[in-house]
Image (cartoon, rainbow, N blue to C red; front, side, top):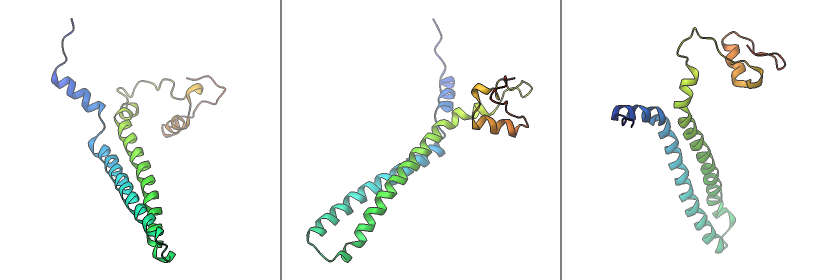
Length: 140
């Protein structure tokens, strides 16, 4: 039988697995703004439909028309930015171990290998003063 992990070990794993609160809170705030835009969009569009049924001059409705458009664009922008911020926050704890090495004396194994090369690896190779391997050449 295996021993149960201690509370400290569980807390350490959770700290590494969960995104930082500050980065995650940005996504949550943007999500709240998107929800507020939805509520405003529903209210303003409902008022606009009811008011347009009375057939007033179009100039009396222009403020509401522009407001509906602005809230719709704001909702889309906030949803996009919120998702982007939440995904970046979720990837942050996993990206940190990839950018640091335990022992800098160890060689970069396969970093510039032609089968696994992409833009990020090319930039890392240039940053470290190495040239990426050409597409037909064997890796290190």
